[in-house]
Structure formats: structure tokens, C-alpha cells
Length: 411
Ligand SMILES: Cc1ncc(COP(=O)(O)O)c(C=O)c1O
Image (cartoon, rainbow, N blue to C red; front, side, top):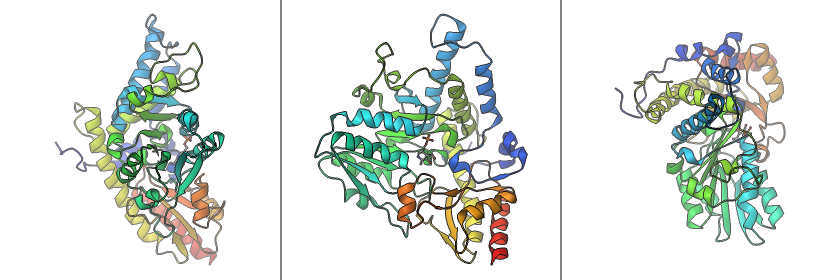
């Protein structure tokens, strides 16, 4: 048995076999926008929709099924994020959960209070805080990243944190350029000022093993559709912290934690799919199935990181040799997500030319609106290429060859 965390054999052919979408033949580099889905996830969704299902309860089998699905999905997300399942909140999307909690968390902010955001972030982790601050007369301060290195230094966060800072909102990884800030250091800065740390883990959770308590985050949001699951959002926080918060809710709906934060009836079929996605991730590296799921996730993410790092190195070596190409993904620690522009080429044209070759790599700002503007790319953005658990060497070759040809032909 491999020691926990050690890279284990990664059989990408076996993994790809589970993705019906790949049989259509495209090479997918659009994972940061939403990954493809394994058959086991689709089956779990279908089986839920075709089984007797009711609202959660204990009397009928249909009620018990709904209840079991919710409990299992909280347990799965608890294992994925290394948190107490009792602090897992489900919602429509990470954006919606952030807006919802921003309204709740800001209810006692007032003039003089401050919230810190980062210019590296997706707008889903900027605008909800800006609007919440505006509504309360509080002040927004923005931590700047280094446009050359792509780094968001803890010092840049410290520069805008003060004694009136109530909350620091920062990304675990940029969905535009992949940068992974030093979260424990940022948590130390936020907590020393008495502020809470809200982390957008939407992009990071798909690529690196998440341990929310070790990161120092008080809140972590993510979206299963980025890590092989269905389209909904997840929030994780310590149940004791959630107990102190009182969101807007219907009078008759449960006031228990975490249900207190969940608006309306949960999407049971999607939750069943999310449990299946976490199980699939846990088996990326085929370790002993009798080991606890968290242990298998640790081994699987170590193998996934090694797989993605090797492919990224091969891809970067070829792309960075293309004349006129500028790569914006330069941070020391980053996910396998590359943003580039090529002199003389509109990113949208590159995207279309790649699509004609069966290579899916989108172009744009990807809602990292502030970051795209800070990089000088405005609303146009760049060409983004993201690796996923199903990416193989052939995909990488198709992408690199495609870009080499497009850029050479057009010259
Ligand atoms: C880093 C990041 N944060 C937030 C979001 C928004 O997630 P959701 O679609 O679940 O609201 C995205 C989506 O692309 C993202 O990449």
C-alpha cells in the first residue's frame, strides 16, 4: 500500500473510459468553466429521478430516500473538504451562496467597517462583498496582485487589512491564471485583525487536495460542476460558526444548522450526483477500496496533481516557444490553467480555429473581470486552457499542434 499522499499509478485510459462525452472526440481544455461528467455521476442523477422520491422525512421509503441522499452528500463533501458534514450547506451556485451569506454576514456592518477583496478574484467573490458593503455604508479595500508574476502576496493583503476589517474575501486559486495564494498566511493576517476569511475554492477544489481547516478559511465555497459533478454550489464552515448567523429564511422552514441556510427544497438528484463525483475522485488512483474515503481522496489528489503537472510541463514547453505568445500564468504555485495571448491574433479567433480542429479552449475574461483589466486584457481577455482528470497526452499534443499551426499559418 502506498503511503498516504504519495503519488499512486494514474490510469488515464481507465478514467477516460468513464466519460461518455469524450466519445464525441473533442479534446477538452474547457474544464475551468465546467468539467465533463463520468457515467457514475449521470447514473446517480438518473436513478434518483426515476426512484420514488419525496421531501425529506422518515415515514415513507420515498422520504427516507431523500433524507439519505442529503446526509450522504454532506458526508461526501465533508470528506472532500476535510470538514464536519454538519457545516455543509447546499445552494444553487457558489455565486448565489456568496450573495446569500454576504447579506447575512454584513447585517451588523456599518460606516467605518471594512471588507477586503482581491483583484485576482472571480467577480463572484468581489461584487457580493462590494454590494453588501455599499448597502451598509462600509468601505471596500482591494488587495492587488503582481501583474508580472501573477502572485497575490500576503503582504499585499496585509497592506489593506486594518483593525476595522470585518472580512477578507480571497480566492484559493484564480480561474483566470491559476495563481494559488498562500491561504494560511492570509488567514493569519485576517484573524490577527479579528476578521473572518471567506475563500472562493471553486477553481482550486478541482485540482488540489482541499483541507479547509488547514487553509485557515472560515468559509469555503465550491461548485461540484467544476470537479466532475452536477451544477450546484456548496458552502463549508464550522457548524459552531454557522450557529452564530441568522440568514433571511421562511418562517416555517427549519432553523437548524445547516438547513437554516438552504433556501427551498434541495435538488436531490444533483446531490446524489455530487456524492458519486466525490466517490469517483476518491478512486482516481485505485487504492484499497476498504480505506476511508478521505484517505483515498488524499492518494487520488496526489496522483492527479502529478498527472496534471506532467501534462502542464509538456504543454507549456511547446506553447511558450510559439513566437509572439504571452503567458499570464506565472505564479510559483498554480493550478494547471494557462491564460495566453498571441500577438496579432484575437483570442476569439484562436478559440474558433482550435474548435475547428476539435480542440475546446474558450477565450474571454471568465468573470475574473478585475484581474483581466489589471492584466491589460480588458473585456477581451485571453485564451484559457485548463487540464482536467481526463486530459491525456494526445489532447495536449492536439492543442499544442493546433496553436503552432494556427500561429504559423497566419504569420
Ligand atoms: C473561481 C470561481 N469562482 C466562482 C465561480 C462561480 O461559480 P458558480 O457558477 O457556482 O456560481 C467560478 C465559475 O466559473 C469560478 O471559476
